[in-house]
Image 1 (spheres, rainbow, N blue to C red):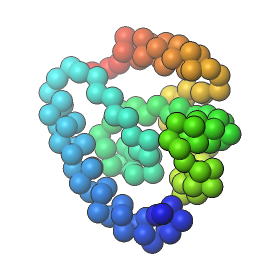
Image 2 (image 1 turned 30 degrees about the vertical axis):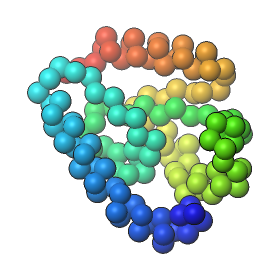
Image 3 (image 1 turned 45 degrees about the vertical axis):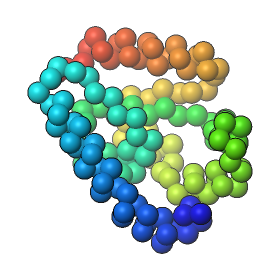
Length: 131
């Protein structure tokens, strides 16, 4: 419902984002003195402030063709195409997200292809991460 009403979306985000952000910052602070690699899975990280808001070193963006995203969400979450497109309309474009990313993985093949790309990325990243 909020994706079709910009004011309702802003009100909802004003309630949820500060609490979610505070929890993320607390969890990151708890890990700050360790040598752990912390992975945040935040689909709207860049929309919510990215590196300006969160003390993250690197941002990975995974892109996928719009048609594939729509097909995936209609089958896996029982969402209507119109609702998915309304949500996407309220998000940054792929070009905007990619412009702020340190790494990009194109999800343009099979699930197995994506798993391989993510595994290869993780192998490279975890070996070369600067602590």
